[in-house]
Length: 178
Image (cartoon, rainbow, N blue to C red; front, side, top):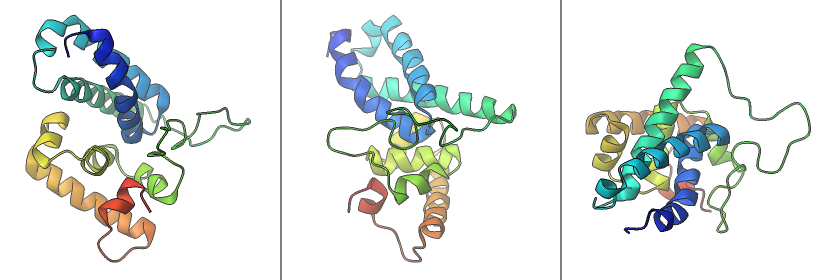
């Protein structure tokens, strides 16, 4: 793809779902994506020649979002799942971002994933929702493949506990398929 507008139109919805699934905060996901796409646009001549321009933008977006979450955590801010007033359409985890094929639907698995620490959530989303390899996840998050394995193992163990599953959860359950 050489046309940035075309790339943006194709990549934005997919990356919004992924970034939102990692952060659990639609505004944070949108802000991170805006930053990532701004950087991609500024370097479009180089980015468009890359094998996977979407991986470049995903990496920036997730890095930006995770840094912002750490900053919020350091300020002792916490994200709440629902506001005291009546909910607005598209406003609470995990239904704020949905797709026509229902990949992000309100269910117990996504609620459990939302309980994971940010890096573990990122690893689970990238592995089982985006279907990236350990190497690709390591590159995206700027960590070592061994860290991806340990974060994934810890996350799956936590999910087993949260979901009451003492056996190995299937990939389809993590993806939200039934």
